[in-house]
Image (cartoon, rainbow, N blue to C red):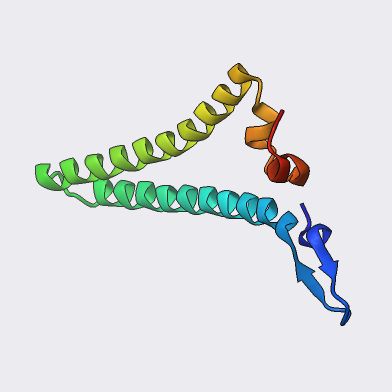
Length: 113
């Protein structure tokens, strides 16, 4: 959602953020965090693969590379699973639009039915 949709104009003619901007900021932070976690997990998987290839058959290095890759994949799955659980709970309770609709300002400010 565009940032300008929640701004008001003050008497001096300046654009001022309002409470309607909170859901937009929250949505942007969540999306940014998800992208960041995905990039970090990808970098750890690449690092683990490189460590595995360059281990030279050393059992300690191979085990370390496997652990790094395992933990990176588990972390990525947990983050994605947390969003899936949130959507599933919202679907079961009938509040999916309220839980996942961070950009709907009226529901955010007044509560959900």
